[in-house]
Figure 1 (cartoon, rainbow, N blue to C red):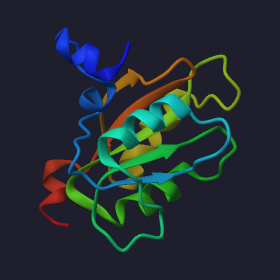
Figure 2 (cartoon, rainbow, N blue to C red; figure 1 turned 30 degrees about the horizontal axis):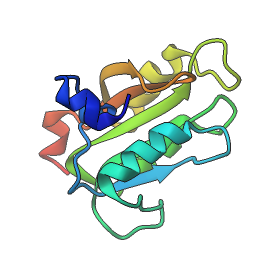
Figure 3 (cartoon, helix red, strand yellow; figure 1 turned 45 degrees about the vertical axis):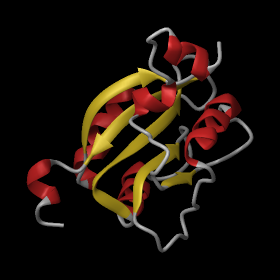
Figure 4 (cartoon, rainbow, N blue to C red; figure 1 turned 60 degrees about the vertical axis):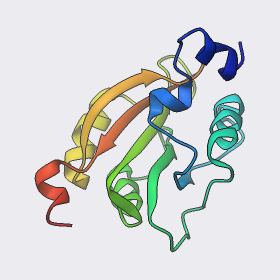
Length: 144
């Protein structure tokens, strides 16, 4: 089903569920050949092009594709915070259980607070990928 058909039926599109709107700047980190291309295509239809991690722009959302073995999650989350708007979100996208590169949920729940983030929700974002929404806690965002 197309996003448009879903919206006509009252079903929210994946971009809507991720809180991504057409006027937002979205940064992508961790792109590789295993990412969910359907998800990327849908989000690019919504926002246009993604900016890369070398951008000087303030970004509204960070899409972080992360797999077990990609390095230190805390360091990468801290790097993702640099260009993030105070009210922005990091969507940490990880392979689902049983898929190559699966990240244990405990790694996310331990890493996010260490990086200065708090997890607010999780959802399935594709056949092989799940997403965890991470934000700067309200008290910390006032200090940024």
